[in-house]
Image 1 (cartoon, rainbow, N blue to C red):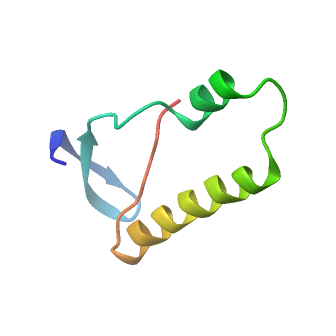
Image 2 (image 1 turned 180 degrees about the vertical axis):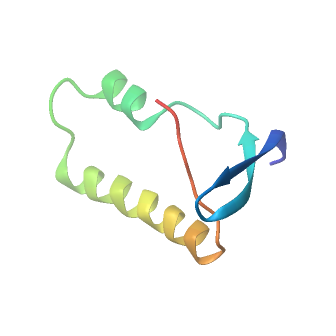
Length: 70
């Protein structure tokens, strides 16, 4: 995956390089709306949460911050 754009941002903790990446697929919210009428099964919710947290942990360990948009 390559960045489609990048920019620098200055903040209280210094300057940071920001990468804009292509969208990889539907959002979790869109997927759930398309496949579930009410609550999602607990096991699936735990799996989604675990995968999201593992991904964020991977980025954090490498000094990368994730900032999504809504």
